[in-house]
Amino acid sequence: MRGTTPRREQGMADPVLASMVHALGLETARHYTAATPKVQAYRDRWAQLAKFRDGPVNPQRVEVSDPAEMASRSSPKRWNWAQAWSASAGYSLT
Image 1 (tube, helix red, strand yellow):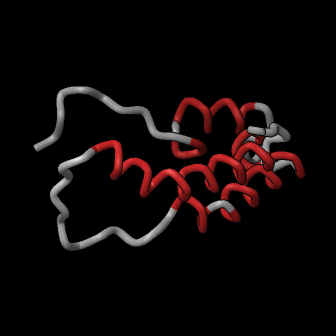
Image 2 (tube, helix red, strand yellow; image 1 turned 180 degrees about the horizontal axis):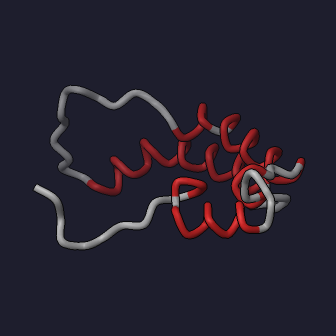
């Protein structure tokens, strides 16, 4: 069943954008194809940080009787991720 809310396509699949681009004699909208070195550096850095944000999930559920103690177990990993992220953004958490 098709939903009742119409959705516009993104990028060059959008007929309005495509007609405007072709009317200007272009083949594509620069906004969707341009990745400046700065933008690419941000994307590359985000990919490098995957090792800090991704990790195994415990398949065996554990009962949490003391939330503070459980938080102290996970704090080192969160802190390492926060340090890596802030360093990539040029900030210092210390």
